[in-house]
Structures are given as C-alpha cells and as structure tokens.
Image 1 (cartoon, helix red, strand yellow):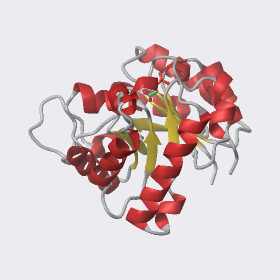
Image 2 (cartoon, helix red, strand yellow):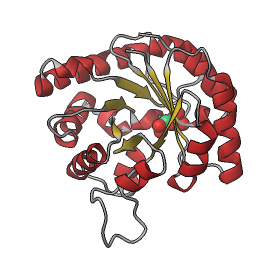
Image 3 (tube, helix red, strand yellow):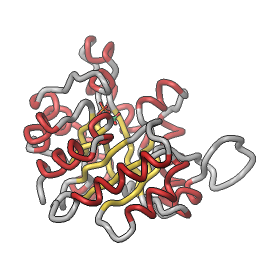
Length: 245
Ligand code: PGA
C-alpha cells in the first residue's frame, strides 16, 4: 500500500489562499507515488474540492460531530463533509482532545459516524510532554487506542506526540520505531490480521529535511503534516520522500 501524506491546514488560509494552495499542490502531484490528502477548514471544502477536481489529491475534514444531524449549533456532521467532496476526516487530533475536551469515547463515536457517512477516518493518538517525561508514553497511547477505535476499524491511525506538534521538535527515529511497533502490536491484538494492514502515520514537525528518514522507519505508513503542508513546495517535497509501498 502506498504511504499517505496528509496535510492538516488547521485554522489557516482565507478562501482564495486555500484554493491557491490546493492548486499549487495539484500542479506538482503528478508522478508522486504516495497517496495525497489535504484537510482545509470545512468552510473551504467545496472550493478546495473543486480546485482539486481531476487531480490525484483527495480532500478531508478536520473534525466532525458524532451525530448525522440535529440541534448542535456550530457543529458539522460527517454527511455534510461528504456532501462537499470530502472522503477523509481527521478525528481526535490532540488540539481537539486538549482544547475541546474530546474523550476517547467521543472520538470512537465520531469515528463510527464518519465511516457511516462514507468517510475514511484518521484517528490521532499521542502522549503529552508530562506522560513521556514520566515514562508513561506507551501506556497513554495504549489507553487511547483501546478507547478511541470502534470494532471493526476501517481507517488510518496517526501517532502524533503532543510535544512534537508545531514545536519543531521531532521524535527520533528510535522513538518512532518503538511507538509504531507498539501501536502495530496493539492493532493486531484488537483486530487480528486486519490490524497488520492499518496504516500508521507519524505526525509532529515533519519537514522536507526529516521526512525521508521518518518515512523509512518500520510501521510508518505516511505522515500527517501541519506547518509544512501550508507551502506547496514543502508538502510536495515531503510527498516525494514517501514510499510507493
Ligand atoms: P505540525 O503539525 O506538522 O505543524 O507539527 C502536525 C499536526 O498537528 O497534525
């Protein structure tokens, strides 16, 4: 399976900037073996999907509600993302877990809702600075995996150590190898053989300079990229470093 390089644009870009960014990525995407995905704010999904029409770059949301519709002021349902052209959605990102109080149980419910709407979920897990300092990183990620994934799980995992997100600090290749190996074991324990095939992305300050070495680590199935996904040259350089599978 090819590696997946996903751009998480977070709360960046006005509409015209998002379209220009999408066009820049689409223009350089030809011949790249990795699967490519960009996740703009939901407000720009339709415009970005239109800009990417006919290219090999997919579009995703950054979050969804767990209900398919209802009285939830300000929220966005998974079928609405799908309706605007999204085929993926990021769920349980640490910025949502930490800033919006999202629990493992809620992330699991959202994951179910996403799959029901025809979206492929990217479920994020990752330990905080304190958990790693206390030597509890695998335990923390183990709990998140046990609580956040429905059975069966048909999506992608993303390991994003919270201390590496937007900080310029990257996990070492050894940290990544250990954690991705642990996540693989847990996925196989939870889902049997199907757990072998689930892609596990690494995220946290992935840049063109470190992408090649991180993407070559065992059990790394791609990257979830924040800051560097806002520049087409950087995002495409990361994508070129990816493995065809
Ligand atoms: P970063 O963000 O690449 O800016 O560290 C990654 C993410 O939050 O998905």
